[in-house]
Image 1 (cartoon, rainbow, N blue to C red):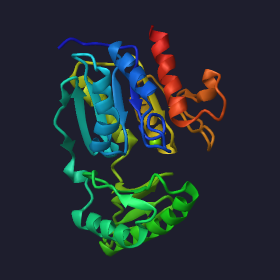
Image 2 (image 1 turned 120 degrees about the vertical axis):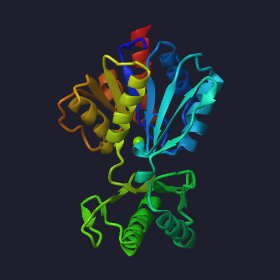
Image 3 (image 1 turned 60 degrees about the vertical axis):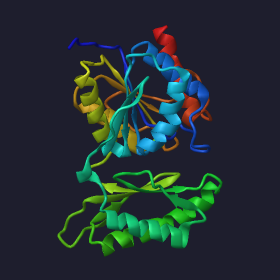
Length: 294
Ligand SMILES: [Mg+2]
């Protein structure tokens, strides 16, 4: 196998930097910039809590329509590292699922029933998840109204975890199982709540990304990670800890930028205003990297 060392590899959170949190869709200009980067040999890897079905619809389909170059491979790490697949111009390869990281099916069934019974007006059960249990805001529901209901839903979800004797955390709250274990996490975001193994995370996604590239003989000279949440920093934390050169881009630095041992960029570094966030900031950074290669 020939070793290739591209100047950059991109590890991209999807909701926020690529998909608008308002429409949940990826704008066309981001698709064409991604194609431009792939064309120049830059590895593009998605690292998301989303399902493989979401990536197939929102990224793979549009990228294939836009013309993915022959011979290039795009990797998608889904469900925070529990599920992954790769695609080429010929379409998707096999879906891999780490079953050890999946929620018990009976618990998922109870959450589905809970949503149908009490939360149908604000949120829906994501049937496309294979390992996580995720409940998402309906696009048409107002954010403030969703966030109020989400707090109630999360409390009910914690009660159901306890009923199944599944030890769990939510932010600072910690409720061990009868054996003292805490194997699960309730993770609220601005548009959804994920219930998942504590072993899932953006750091697991980063380690899978490095492995997937290594299997192709690709060792990037540097990484760029992009996210909109505090938890997305785990990608850059992990890469930095493994001695990879990395810079992180925060496209929604509303809570400020934490001190890190690697550079952290925001839209302000591109000379953009503080109102340029999410996919607008994500798209601008992708473009800046493409322009720098041209
Ligand atoms: Mg996100």
